[in-house]
Image (cartoon, rainbow, N blue to C red; front, top):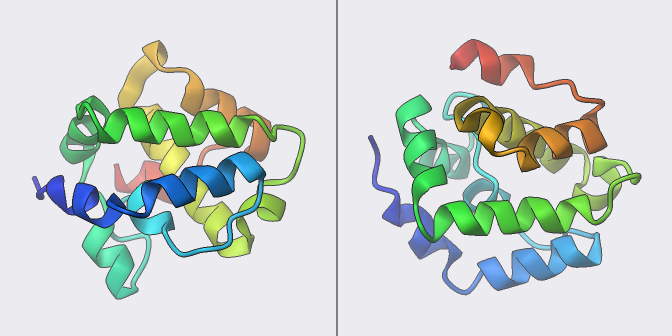
Length: 137
């Protein structure tokens, strides 16, 4: 399993901005890789490789982490305040795809106890998970 501290370091000074943008309903800066991470292998950029989640075990650890898990849930709850709007209007085309991958990953590893990820998949993606994420899991 990779070092989860890489996410804490990357989020320092960026998380508050990301949360503010999600609350405002418009992403304008560059934080998607380390705030709403997806599985490694879905992206090829240096940032996607650096902040890609290695697999199920790392995703479970991320979700259980006292800081990262709460921050992730907080971001998804902020996004859900804009349910009814298309994700692409909030995040842009590419980041809306990354968000779908993130939601799929954490819904898959959280089980039925954590419905915020399922709620967001339903609100923004018609309940359809990202097939590539499920295939990699």
